[in-house]
Each structure stands twice: as structure tokens, then as C-alpha cells.
Length: 92
Image 1 (cartoon, rainbow, N blue to C red):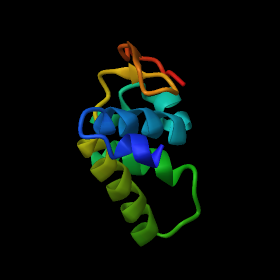
Image 2 (image 1 turned 45 degrees about the vertical axis):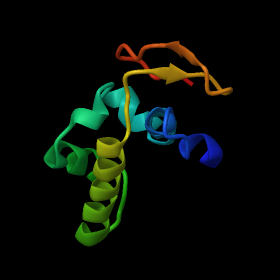
Image 3 (image 1 turned 60 degrees about the vertical axis):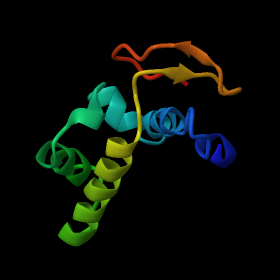
Image 4 (image 1 turned 180 degrees about the vertical axis):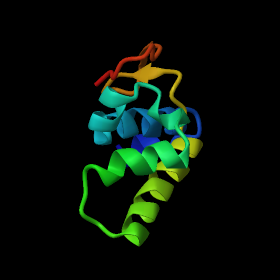
């Protein structure tokens, strides 16, 4: 996946797809999780961890920074080829 992510053509879409998989529980709850604000993300993650407020803030910031960089409008298959658009669902 790292080599696919390094592509200037598809890298941001590869990251978007990876985020929907890595944060699948978040995307199952909020299909457009990448558009959520920090307060909603904090509320989501707070109910799933015993981490302190600083770690929680870093968790939210990490997701927000990755999601802001990524693109979520296309679906790529395992070979990196386009195979559809995201329409409120997680595609793996």
C-alpha cells in the first residue's frame, strides 16, 4: 500500500480507502466521517477508549489531518484500478 500511496495520481484516494478500512467502526456509524468536526469525532472516540484527554485530542487530530489530505470520492480495487464511487458505504 505504501508504494500505491506514493503515487501522485492515486495516492490521496489510496489513503481515503485505507482510512475507511482502518476506521471501519467510525465509518459504519458515520458514513461521511471524514466531514465530521472535532467535537463529533471526540465524542465518538471517547466512548471507545480509556485514554486521557491529551491522547484523545491526538487521536482526533491524527484522523482529521489524514482525512483532510485524503480523497474519498473514488474507490480503487486492490490493484489500484478505479472501480466506482463512494456513495455512503464502506468499500473494501
